[in-house]
Amino acid sequence: MAVHVKPSKLTHFSVPSTVNPLKHNTSENPDFPWFPLKQKHGSLFTHSNSAKLAKNWTEYQGINNWEGLLDPLDDTLRSEILRYGQFVEAAYRSFDFDPNSPTYATCKFPKGSLLTRSCIGETGYKPTRNLRATCGIRLPGWIDRGPSWVSTQSSWIGYVAVCHDKEEIARLGRRDVVIAFRGTATCLEWLENIRATLTSLPDDVAANVGSKGSGGPMVESGFLSLYTSGTSACPSLQNMVRQEVGRVLEMYGDEPLSLTITGHSLGAALATLAAHDINTSFGNAPMVTVISFGGPRVGNQSFRHQLEKKGSKILRIVNSDDVITKVPGFVIDNNDAANKQALKVAGLPRWVQKRAEDMQLVYAEVGQELRLSSKECPQLNKGGVASCHELSTYLQLVNGFVGSNCPFRATARRVLGKHYRQKLTSL
Image 1 (cartoon, rainbow, N blue to C red):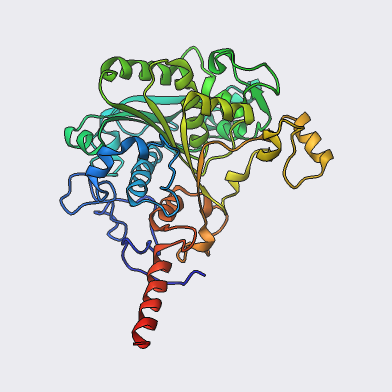
Image 2: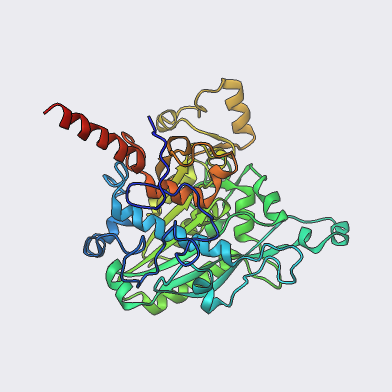
């Protein structure tokens, strides 16, 4: 169905054939024009109908679960997804990945200049808090004899930023607060990722809802550890998020406000946990929305119900060819679960289903899904397994996606052009 084309420029009808994911701003890569917010030529940050966004911002934040906006993909929603994806890109660019650096696993830039120095352009937002995640795995003493990067327990994971620009607040229709998380980067984060069994939420996170064990809300052990673990020198990510959200609500709680939590890969999982935690901890929380890219599964069916009950709105951007979105564990058959019969894992023998239940590996997908596919994109269908999970791939897919009937803009232009030529010849 897809037609291979080689556009030389990113337009409303195509995606770039080659993109350096570390060169997203126009001055460095003219083939991928992420214009700054206030540049007069417009951008993916501003090309959407501003009046439409300001008037209907709750719709684009998921108040009605994005009904009628995903297929075909609404252009204003597309622009908003791409905009939040750039906040995640800033988290990646700001992280010091060099294990030989004395500042390894920290933010390379001062908090105040984080967004501008990460080259994503002027956003209208001001970073207000750096966030760190701590691994809760107890390491053997001999690990200290190895390289320091192996045992790095706490690392910079993202930031909180508040929209302060008056023009941007007017465009958005409210003051928006972004919490952005990067994906996995350190050895200990990888170790936490593979702790795939489900564990009960602590009472302070679960709000004493449901019973302990498989009947109550449960989430992946490693993700919960990274969210709730802390040390004497570094408070937990949970405490940092709660403190900053509390401060923001105290300052801006009397005006239209939204909390948008966004992340890629591990960051997508942490974004989901943070959304649940905020809505559970703050009775006066504004609308909380998650925009996640390439996220793994996070919790069980009870956890999903709690997210829905508390009002968390989650939009998962999923690449069908990305294996990370298919792990950990198994997904329950929602229809069987709705009948409250014995849980059944779709397509698996009963003995395997029983084993998955016993091992606490039965997960449930959360929120709404925007499903894309690298194989259906003319510029990405020859990429490898690793490239299917990259944030840059997700941003390209979102930018080019039209709808399920004609997946990508480049394909749509070729198909419509062929139809138009056939119509002319028939006259």
